[in-house]
Image (cartoon, rainbow, N blue to C red):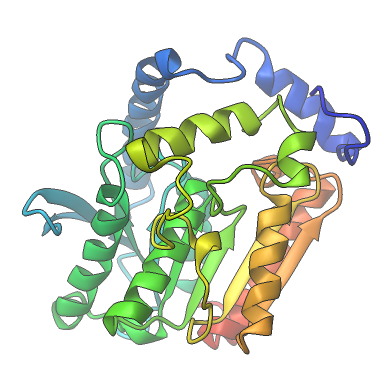
Length: 325
C-alpha cells in the first residue's frame, strides 16, 4: 500500500494480508467500477442469507416509508431464543455512500447476535449517486422512527438500544443521532462509530497521507461528490450530511469511536471524539496503531483481536451486559 511521505506504517501482521486482498481489485475505485462492485455485493448478500438460514436465525423484512413517500426495507434478525430484554442494535452498512447493502458487514452484527442475543435491524438505504443527500440520511432516520413506532410489536426498547455503523455507515449513524437530537427523538443509549466517514472536506493530514490503498483519499472524494451532488464543495454543507460540520455536538448519546492510525478517517474521527468531550458528552476513542481501513476484518491478527475486545468492553457497559445469554 503506497502512502505519502511520513505516513504512519501499517501493522506488519496485517500488511501482508492487505497486499493479497488488494490483488485484482481496482484502486482507486472510479464511478465506472460501481456497477460491478454492486453486483459482487449482491452475490455476497445471497450467500449471507443462506448462512443465516443455516444458523437458524429468524429474519423478517419490513417495508418502511421514508420522508419522500418511497419505501425502503428494514430487516430484523435475531435468534429463536431471543427474550424481551434482548438489546436492540440498529446497524447501518458501509460502502462509501455508493456501495453495499443491508447485509454488508454481516459478520460484525452476527457477533452481536451471538454475544448479546441482540435483535439487529439493518436498513437498505438508497445509494448515491442516484440518490443524493438527504436521501440516504432520511432513509436511515426513517428506519429508526419505524423501530420506535413498532417497538411494542417487535418486543424491543429503542431507548436502551444502540445505533451502529461502519465507514459510511458510521457516518450515517452519526448523522441519524444528530437528526434525532434536532428533531426531538427517537433517543438511543449509544452510538457505535467504526471508522466513520463524517467529513466531506477530505483535507485532513491523514487524508493526504493515504492517497492510495484500501479506501483512499481519491475514493473518499468520489463518495462525497456522489452523495452531495451540487452541494459538494460548498461551505454550507449541512451537518446532517457531514457530521463533522456540526457546530454543536452537545446532547448526543455516548459514543464509541474506533479508527486506525493508517487510514484516511483517522484525523476526522479523533477530532469528532475530542469535540464530543468538549461539548460535555461521553466518548471512548480507540486509534489502533498501524490499522488501515477495514483492518478489523482480518480476524486472525492480533490488532483485530484487540479491537474486538475493546469493542466488547464498551458494548458490555453500554448494554448493561453481565453474562452470555
